Length: 283
Image 1 (cartoon, rainbow, N blue to C red):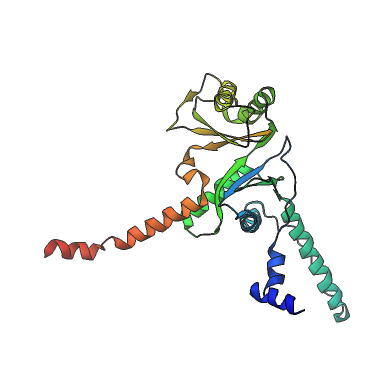
Image 2 (image 1 turned 90 degrees about the vertical axis):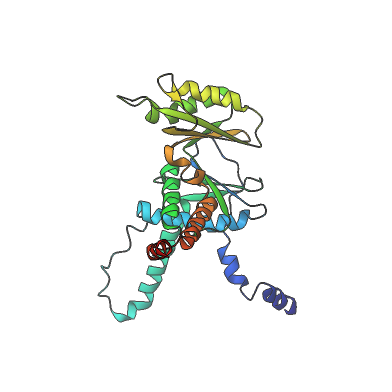
């Protein structure tokens, strides 16, 4: 008993709340046909990163996809007061069910890899537009919403990491972006990232993906219309296509977005006001 009290004291007397904040991760690998989001963080901060992103993703899903829609109706509002306790219990059950549904949209996977987490997503979540909205809002507001998270990398679809499967995957993911009806020529770039992966080297990946893009589009590494992100992890490879504001959004690195906004704010404080400029000119 005394040992437990000492433990609670070390935890700041808040061991229960800390336990409640811990989100279990599925101990699994990424399977072919999966969509999701890679997240990077500082070393030994994987658990904290997972916790804060679950909160951020669920909040963002409510805004983007209205995941709170379909709340319990008020048909029973005129029930006798004797049923208040039952009504409260029913409302609590409804809240728990809705919360569980939200969590199911994002399943964090324990990859057994330092500094990297993967969140498997389910419809209606589109990883590319979802991450883009989060980063755009962070850049606009400058409000720091995460502490441990670094970069978010959306993955539209995954496949087994071999040449044949990569060809099929590239054709499927790239088709709506580069081979739509009345498609105009685009400037594009390819950016592969490999983690614990040795099957395909960088040149192989670029060659296969560029072939799927086609000759009607031109490579431009600095002023592209579309950027193709390729994520190779162990025996899995994933592809997504992002827009040309990728660099403006600090390559979807939330920490760099917050730092840039903070620096921008500090610089604006140091700039003299219009009145100060006038005074400086006349003296």
